Image 1 (cartoon, helix red, strand yellow):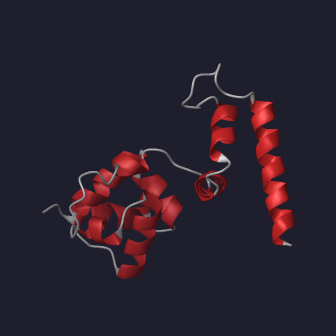
Image 2 (cartoon, rainbow, N blue to C red):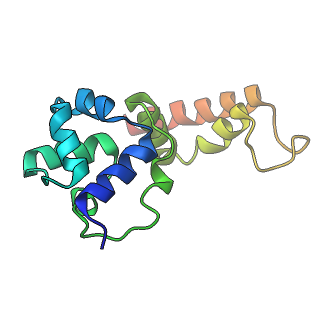
Image 3 (cartoon, helix red, strand yellow):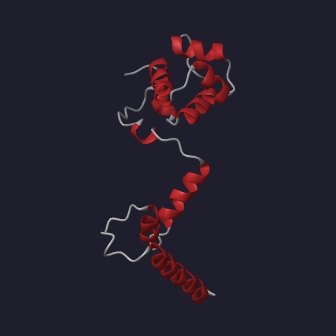
Length: 136
């Protein structure tokens, strides 16, 4: 089982963080981060929470209790809050997904078979507006 210091180092490397970066992001002293990395100390619960949050891993994983070998595969791209909101809106509105896909040029169907982006967006927006009128 990997130790706290090994997991901390791995998570930092995955994010590309140096000790000074992690210290700034967590508001912890650089010397404390150094002691964690050397294995001299393990983080208290409040510091463990901060470290895990900044590094994008679970507290349990950081402490060595979870063995998720794919832990970093989902954390390779940092998303802003706005990007997360856009993804959530996309997932929550399946009717809009084809229009968004075509707008972004990631539509699965052949371009010749698909309506133009403008036509598709107009049709989708009209349907959404009609749907909202019916609910009122």
